[in-house]
Image (cartoon, rainbow, N blue to C red; front, side, top):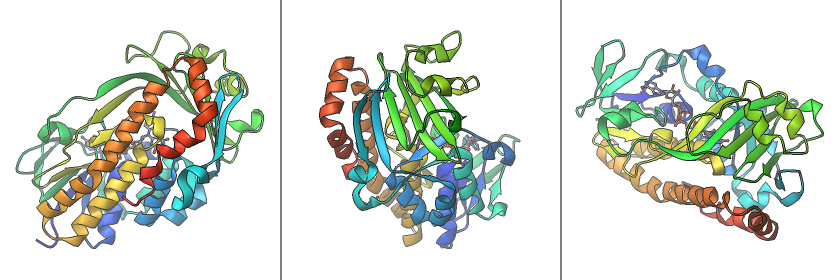
Amino acid sequence: MNRPRTLIVGAGISGLALAKALLDRGLSVDVVERRAEDEQATLGTGLYLPANAVRALRGIGVGDAMAKLAEPVVRQRLHEHRGRPLAEFGVDRIWGDVGPCLAITRGELHEVLRTSVDASVVRHDTTVTEVAQDRTVTFADGTTDTYDLVVGADGINSAVRRSLFGGPEPRFLGQLCWRFVADGTTTPAMTDWTARLGTKGRTFLTVQLGAGRVYCYADINSFVPTAPPGDWRTLFADFGGPVPRLLEQGANAHFAALHESVNTVWTRPGVALVGDAAHAFSPSMAQGGAMALEDALVLADALGTTPDISAALAAFQARRAGRVAWVVSQNHRRDKARNLPTPLRNFTLRRAGERMFKANHAPLHTRP
Ligand SMILES: Cc1cc2nc3c(=O)[nH]c(=O)nc-3n(C[C@H](O)[C@H](O)[C@H](O)COP(=O)(O)OP(=O)(O)OC[C@H]3O[C@@H](n4cnc5c(N)ncnc54)[C@H](O)[C@@H]3O)c2cc1C
């Protein structure tokens, strides 16, 4: 079978990247997306893209388009919540020659990926409700179609995963977050990536997006996956530096309860999961986008190398398992570290911040 009928469910980061990579390898593909096209372009806030994500974007062939819109992130700074520095290092110390790190809005990244794929390939306003063992796909309007290959790129609550893979439901990680993009021109000069670490697991991260915009990400620990009553910004009232001025702009921040969903089996006959559908973790290492893009590249490589779908899916699973497991374990370590007593955490970061960041990214230097 040279040109299998392939359906990608979901036109997010992983779905669009996979579509582009498969089309570039001469394979045909259909993508369905439940959201309307204009709704997708305005989704979300900012994204930090570590060097392995940027390398994968270059591999997919959208490196130049990215470079035009994204802002380079050159340094990372860790401060305690009032602004005293704990650690600071250039991202080249962490990533070596893997390449630059970038920051971009989600909408802009989506636009770069969307315009790289022939528009006729993506069908919007189309929701998959179920996939049967024989790869017959049922859509929300009641119609059905059968494919040779179905790829679930449909995010953490994947309908493809639920239909065919079972496995545990996404698990609440005990963290709540708020995100918004602020006008950074009204605050003291802010550059690059700065995380301000408070007590009780609170973090306020700022990432420079260029054109005076700053991506703000704030999180706290919580026993329940619901927003506490009242104005969330009071939870960060003791933070110093530019945070109070930025919070003035955060009234309509996006709220999310953070969940993890990590299956270890991502393939079955004629079906694969990529991106968050396969493995969604806490954003503490900002590796979600990178893993989604790497999945897309590796799966496209495997499918482009052999017409045998089963062999390609087995190769994909084998190449991705160890790397994703590493990211999951590092995320867990980082999530534990945020709950260390504050003096111990600060001492550790002062003494070994750069070394720790370097060590927990080192295995990602190799190509996926
Ligand atoms: C708070 C937060 C901050 C983050 N920050 C970063 C960061 O800074 N850097 C980074 O790299 N990563 C970050 N991530 C992770 C990153 O957002 C995800 O890993 C990435 O979006 C996964 O892409 P995806 O395409 O697999 O899934 P998604 O982005 O979830 O896309 C899935 C797509 O499928 C569609 N869909 C869903 N169900 C169906 C259906 N049944 N039928 C049809 N279509 C469907 C959805 O509408 C969506 O468009 C963050 C995550 C969170 C929660």
